[in-house]
Image 1 (cartoon, one colour):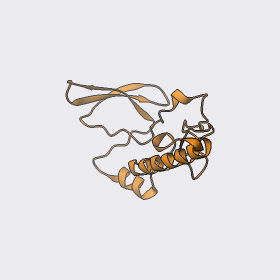
Image 2 (cartoon, helix red, strand yellow; image 1 turned 120 degrees about the horizontal axis):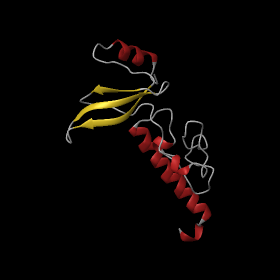
Image 3 (cartoon, rainbow, N blue to C red; image 1 turned 60 degrees about the vertical axis):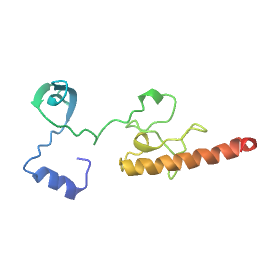
Image 4 (cartoon, rainbow, N blue to C red; image 1 turned 45 degrees about the vertical axis):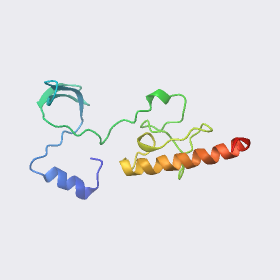
Amino acid sequence: LRASKVMADRLLKHPKVTVHFNTAPLETKGDGKLLQSLVLQDTITKETRSMDANGLFYAIGHTPATSLFKDQIDLDEDGYIKTIPGSTVTNIPGVFAAGDVQDKRYRQAVTSAGTGCMAALDSERWLEVNYPEEH
């Protein structure tokens, strides 16, 4: 689990929660309005199974949506865009990364908003240095 020990223990002990380790959702099924079941795949054996479900929270452990940038920008081994620590600066001049594609530690909306602001400020400074006559 990607959680603090205290939070992981609370989750694992909760009587109404079942954690499905090494499992990924492949498909959602429903009646066109409401979720009714999930098709799940064991990420190790690749076996699939169906499970009744009327709700789904899917976020923790997600893969960042950076495949479009593969071989164009430096990514780490998990697919996150690499930035200079303490900034949003990438290996490409004038390209900045923020939010879930860059933040593999906190992964929260509030930190995404914060790094979005950082990227705006970093890009403004970059433009001032590289295109001073236009400001």
